[in-house]
Length: 392
Ligand code: UDP
Image 1 (cartoon, rainbow, N blue to C red):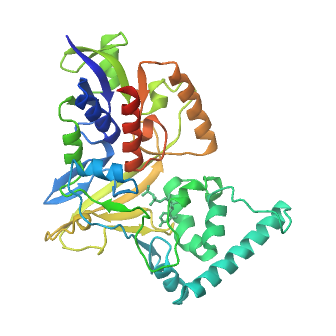
Image 2 (image 1 turned 135 degrees about the horizontal axis):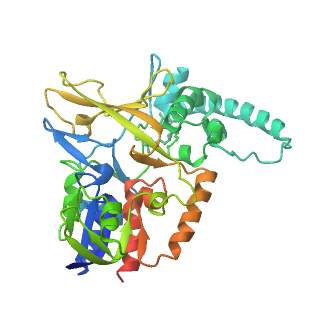
Image 3 (image 1 turned 30 degrees about the horizontal axis):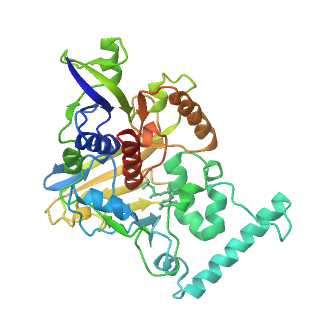
C-alpha cells in the first residue's frame, strides 16, 4: 500500500502551492479533488482559442515582490490592467472611483471640483449620523458597516449609483448589515486612473491559469473526481483512504482546503457563503462589450457583471465568449465562492478553528478552509507560510 506524507484535499491554488513546496523538499503528496479537473476556482478552459475563466474572472495582482516572482516561475504574465466599466441604467462610468468617474457623474474636470462635491455630501451625511447617534461635533464618527463606510468615503451619489444596489445584489444583504472592509478593497482616488488595483504588479498568465497549477502539481500524485468524504468513509480509519478504483493508501498528515464546517459535519451549524452562477454564451461577434469586465450596478438587471473573456489576453478571435454572473446565497449542492465575513459568521468560524487546533494531523487552507475573502496573492502567501512552518 502506498504511503504519502501528505494527503492534500483540493487541487486549487492553496493545495497546489503547498504540494509544490512539499515535493520540492522531498515529501510525498497525494492531491485529490472532487471536481473532474485541477485548479479549483482559478480553472481556465480553452474554447475556440479563448481562455474562459470558468469560475469567474481572476486577475492576478500583488504588491509583494516575492509572490510576483514566485508566480512568474510558473507562467508568463501579460500586461493586462483591470479597468472595469460600471453600467447604471443608461449611464456608463469608469471604475474604480476616480476622476474619470467623477467627471462623468457631475460634469466637472478638476480634483478640486470633485473634492468639493464629495466633501459636501460626506459632511451632510456625517452630520446627520452624528445627530442620530447623539455625538458632539468633536467626537469622531466611526463607520460601523459598509453603507456608512461607503457614504462617508465617497458621498451619496457614488454610493447610490455605483455601490448600493451592486453590493446588495452581490451579497444578498442590506449594506447596513455588511462589514465595512469589503468596500475598502476598492481604490478611491482624485487622479484620472482607471486601474482597479493599487498593487505594484498585475497581469493575466498567458495561456490561462490551469497551466500554473499543472506545473505546481508536478511530482505529486493527482487524482480528480475523488470526494474526500467518500475516500475516507471507504477506509474507515483516519490515516487511510480508498480511491474510487479501490486503490488503498495511507498518509501521515492532511491538508484540507474545502469547507471547514463541512469537515466537522456542521457540528456548530453551517457557515454562510455566497455562491455564483455563470451563464456562458458564445457570440458570433468579435467584440461584445469592448472590455473584459462590465459591472451592472442597478438592481433591475439580475446579473452582477458580464465578463468577456478574450479581452483578458487581448484576443483577436472572430467570435467571443461572455459569462453573465449571478450571485446567490450558497446552499448544499452549489459551489461556495465567498465567505460572508460578518460578525456572526466570523464568530462561528472561530469555533471551528478552535476545534481544529486539537486535530494535530490536520491543517486547513484556502478561502474555504480558513474562511477568508482571500485574493490569489494572499492565498499563495498563506500557503507558503504554512509550508515554511510545516516543512521546516
Ligand atoms: N463594489 C461596488 N460596486 C462595483 C464593484 C464593487 O459596490 O461596481 C463593491 C462591492 O461591495 C463588492 C466590493 O466592492 O463586494 C469588492 O469588489 P471586488 O471587485 O473586489 O469583488 P470581487 O472581484 O472579489 O468579487
